[in-house]
Amino acid sequence: MTLEFIGYAAGRQASETIAPEGPVIQPGYLREVARTHEEAGFDRVLIAQSASSPDGFVLADQVLAATERLGVLLAHRPGFVAPTQLARKFATLDAFHPGRIALHVITGGDDADQARDGDFTDKPTRYRRTDDFLSVVRRTWESAEPFDHEGEFYRVRGALSDVRPAAGIPVYFGGASADAIRVGAKHADVYAFWGEPLAGIAERIEQVRAAAGRDIAFSVSLRPIPAATEAEAWDRAREILRLTQDRVGEFKGRRDSSEAVGSRRLLAAAATGDVVDERLWTAVAKTTGAAGNSTALVGSYEQVADSLLDYVRLGVGTLLIRGFSPLADARDYGALVRLVREKADAVTVGA
Image (cartoon, rainbow, N blue to C red):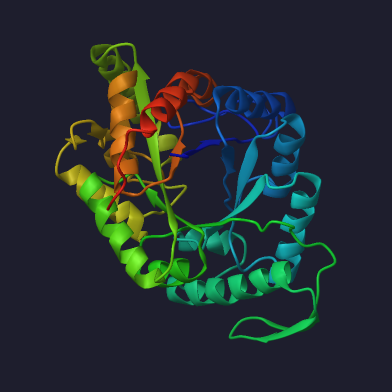
């Protein structure tokens, strides 16, 4: 069985437990974290987007140039760049680094962060815009002849790109609402979920498959906390929670996740207990208001690997794993990535 592992790269090191220090862009750190992921056996790294983040296209190009085979999953919020331009940007990166760039579509669940970039549309409108946007992006990548498009949000006439991806660019899509499922099921190659309990992931896979009516792949995002023994892993988890609680006032409120359906689903799981499905740990999600990828798997390397494979058995083919100490954890995850891949051949998939 072929599994895809995705890590996380940014211009400097920071997390719930580590306060950012120094310049926002630290080229040496970015190169080091990229090479560390490549050496650990990851397939891609995610470069996230927000209204205050550095330009993701530049970061992506730096990561790709610093590595030999590592790919980039570059997040993008539709609405700020014309879809024809976005398609050419991605196709240009692909021309320099064939097969190593992928698009992660984030429609935007935080009204305040959208407004920082001048977008005051509501969520239903944003999802309709994303639908229209991706229709134009796909045609720009695929059409060898000029085309016209008349949509609710985008109108182009005689559009044609001189640069197009030879083998296509994968589209990943995140979102938990009914609108997200409708749009993502239509356009996505890979539909991405946050780390819900197994029953929740099984439910969502069924929903997306039914809406898509076609083959579609799935990703789940988790924060593994492995150690040599289960006791050592829980000692580390408790220290992570303590540091998160100490720092939560510094970052809570920068992102409003109260209207994000995905965050509400994580908080609902957290309300059932700090540990779900034997080792899915929800305490950090509860502390931070589930502002993003915030549920963890705690245990020995073997136990965490087995828990990751439980998601694979449901039909998940991409595992997006990110640590609380980004650089050290990326290095440490090499053992976990190898272990999961070794065990994957024995897994029977079926949601």
